Length: 262
Figure: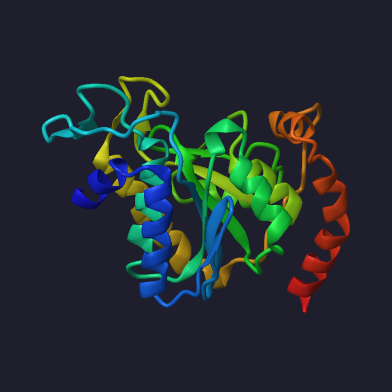
């Protein structure tokens, strides 16, 4: 609880430095780049969360109502989107060593994800989990249409839902890695009445532990794009003049897939 409250009070710039230094203490050989912090792991799953919030100022006062299990800022926005995701990943790093990616500026067009795919090769992982969804049981796949992957994730108590765009909309497509966004306990995101249900966040973390424990039993899941019309992530790429990233990545997808087969 105290760790989450600490994360909620940091600016994006402060948080980026804290995360980089923490990954150094974990001896994960992190990379500190414009747009992201990344570290490889020894468990073939990539965990993703973004470091920014929509609020210009971080909360100075945070209250926890234990009877309602509700964390909130009585004077404005909270930033549970996506400090809950950051907290989830740090909690998992206490026991596991997955690959991790913390991105900047997701809220203004997935800028950090775009910079990531232009800087890094696809990690050698079986799938990606993002912690950046409201509620308690949602699993969102966006345009990733791998039905076997969807079924696998739903076996852990999540229910398929839909969303417009997040960092995995770009990461998964460019890297050809099946990706899912999981609920992490925040509600009314992007508003001054946002709040976090801490026990619901912890429940997602517990289920993520089960997913990581099960990793040796599952294959690599590819993305299997099922877009039927131009998606929001397409529009973001075009507006930023980076739509060629997808064209450039096609050969990379084949090489990555072949590498995983070996």
